[in-house]
Length: 129
Image (cartoon, rainbow, N blue to C red; front, top):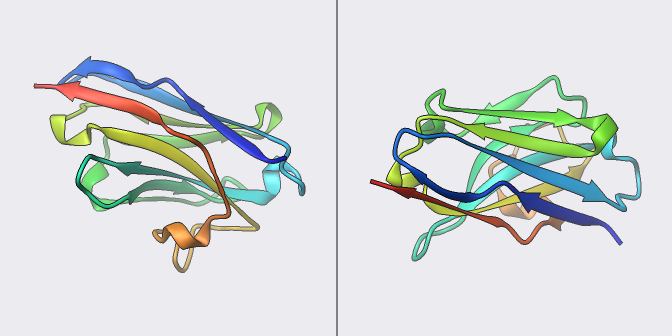
């Protein structure tokens, strides 16, 4: 069975940094054939996309609120994706989840959760003021 497992969340002060990781296993067509995204959901708010990296790793997309603070990357050899988050703000507090889609290049509906088939359970990020 395909699985995505997130790690790296925690409590950090505003202005601090965290690096999230998403480790994949059991993806049928090989990890490098999947586009990957990070989503987040804060209490009482809708889930929103944070960043996307394409199946070939050559294209990345970020939501406007990232404003150059986050960097998404992937390591196909380790079947993992990472999100390095800097200059964190209290409004970044949320449950962060990774998602995967086959042969996905972060185009079209890359911001839509419905574009992704596989999801992890999430890792909590809390940023204190």
